[in-house]
Image 1: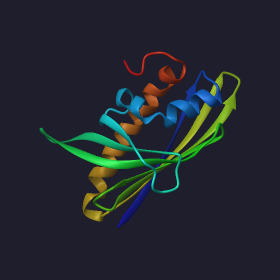
Image 2: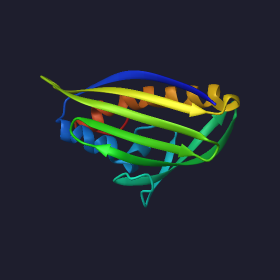
Image 3: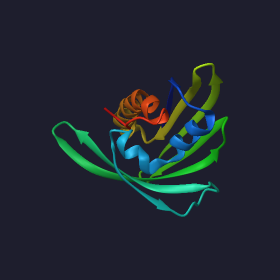
Length: 150
């Protein structure tokens, strides 16, 4: 198994409550995360408040293939959101976001951590990084109440 992480920041003109709501409303992420094609709500199993089956479409060169994983909201407050995603091939992703009020709204301090089998890690980590950079670009408009993506 291999572990890797990256951090990024997002600034949005909204309240901490609105930021928390958008971050934890995973069905809305079909318009925010470019990999997600569908989200189904399911029962939580890791002690979280909400859980979802996330259906992604991944690309490998000219080919695309579906992947489904389970994501659970472990903690959701106006200060912090923690989510855990687990995929059948022993891949887990933990998203930990600190929500900091600022004069113009909020600053989100986001940390993405992935644990995956070595053979899959490079591809999965690159896909996760690219998707979260696009998510970071789209979040401010969604949090301000505007369109979810452009």
